[in-house]
Image 1 (cartoon, helix red, strand yellow):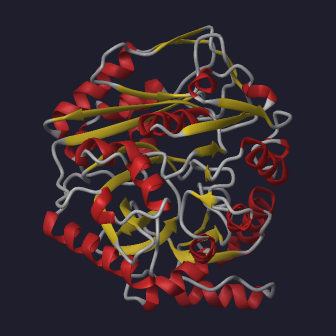
Image 2 (cartoon, rainbow, N blue to C red):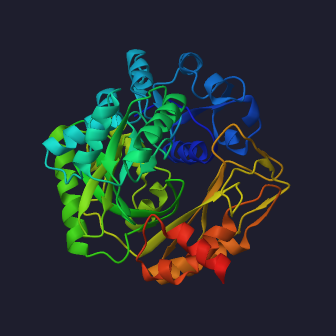
Length: 451
């Protein structure tokens, strides 16, 4: 097992990983930028290191500085959290080359799955259900138009080298496709340092369902069921739940079993999430694979009783899944998570500022994951998520009620938050029916304006 782990991240995920390390009796080294000096989670770490100015490129994305911290701390493990360098194969390889274990998949898997078109090719070779898509688009306009015709409009232009909704743009016909491709390339180049883009079939009102997987370094791999992540704004999830509602369990379990078999076949060796879209025809198709811990991992933990962060660390340390996980993994009850963002609830534009009041509900049955405390600034330098609120209930209805009560009990002053928008979703008949889709949030808010 590890003796000391550097947590190469910030905020809620840094706090989450530090909590797991403390529970395992493993020493930890946290890092912080100038903007995060004095953050409350730093007190959870055995030691903490300053890594530079507030902009991420000068701190949390600065590989040289992080590698220097790893050396100075005498660490034998690095947990990247999510975001930043968590899916950077070059960083993972540099960590491994330094004789330190990267707590995540091997660099080869981060590289293979990080490039979306190569990931689609690999998944298709192993029998993963697949929607129509293109290779990386060439420069020639005629070839781009031909690729779109082969798929059929509408299409979605997507960056090949990154995710998180950045650069994902729809094109409904040929008259707008080329301009959309150029915009997506520009956004991808700025966001990921890779301007390659490709096309996928654009589903109308799809379900976004993702499957949690965990592998080990001995050829073992399992799934831990699924999460529904359909409630989104700007292609980023706001509400996640497990299990996915209003779906035929035999169908979902069959997809999960097939995914686990494919993950075993290819030799995937740590935590990951296979994201799928379900179209109006009820069929699933592969979207992408994230080679890291997910923001929404907590809902899976709540329904399975498995601590995914501990399991990820133990897998990276070389343990077999048989020693890490229960012999039988089952789902109990229902869990829902809401992401609380510092943003305008109408426009969803970021709303940074000082948390003059930050008082989450004090109920032990409500799980709050945050990297903030009252008096701290939500800065414009990072993702504006203030907290994750996770609840578990015996039924979906009970979980919805508990989450709505928890959000209503939040006392936050300073930045605007998206809590009013999330409450509108939770109270809507569409959401409560379980017939969710990726266009649900704007539909509900539009109806609310009319009433």
